[in-house]
Image (tube, rainbow, N blue to C red; front, side, top):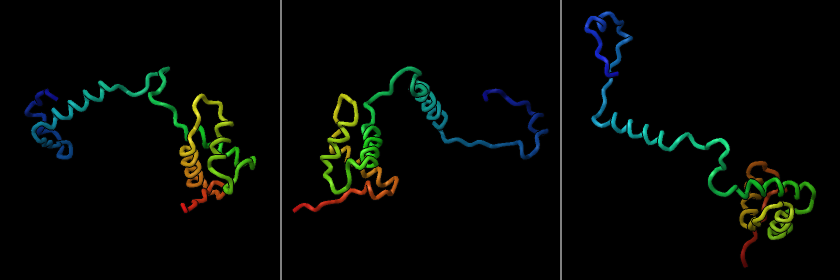
Length: 126
């Protein structure tokens, strides 16, 4: 956009073709820095490279919970500790999934499906 436009050229343009741009001082520099920063960060994942961080354990637990409930090996009258033990037996992972993670996965299943088989009974502390 650093080209100069010939004087006679603007007079030949229709009114709809003329656009006026007004920028606050420093706007172009700010935009250029943001553009360079995005380029430095890259486009995300490189093909063949594994993503950073550990895998989501809730995503592992949800199918196992569904299978256990469908096979009637667990129901809402049983404890969450039992469910966590059953989920860990079903999965072939090196790390166990905590009872809290299984509880959050069960709550998420109920929220998504609305199926009462996944509804957790909240017990009050004595």
